[in-house]
View 1 (spheres, rainbow, N blue to C red):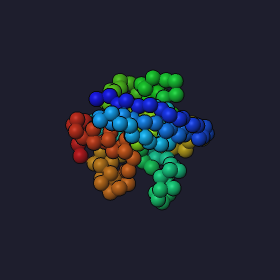
View 2 (view 1 turned 90 degrees about the vertical axis):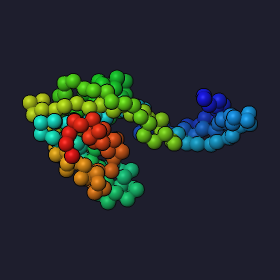
View 3 (view 1 turned 30 degrees about the horizontal axis):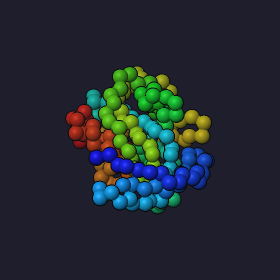
View 4 (view 1 turned 180 degrees about the vertical axis):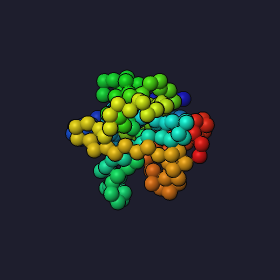
Length: 192
């Protein structure tokens, strides 16, 4: 079933870091009547994320950085452990994730596997996130990582059991990272 939507009004509320829109629209109900909504939609562009894993070492490479939104919502120090990720800008998802891997983690990755695409917060954010996985090895380390420009990123190499224990303990609370770790476990790439 395809929704029948009629936009009545679209107003830009902010064009700072990303764009915030206010929409007034009607959506047709099955009985033919219309339901009117007024919603704010945050357009931040699409992104890509990558789980770096090593089967032999049974480990993953993650990052740790400050995220203001989590700090505002009660994350005491605002630091978040995450899989490397970034916005596509004008790149393809695979090109984006290759750049992010080298910038954030220091690893120049080889073959990548596209896993799936998901909306992470569809109630108010337009972003689609492309999920990837790639194996890493010590000889692929090109630099120390840590991000570029205004980024301050710590690179973490964790055993897979430790990463999963941190999820269970509430230390890894980033949705995309939890999804990637669980995917690795379901696929049998790593041992819990």
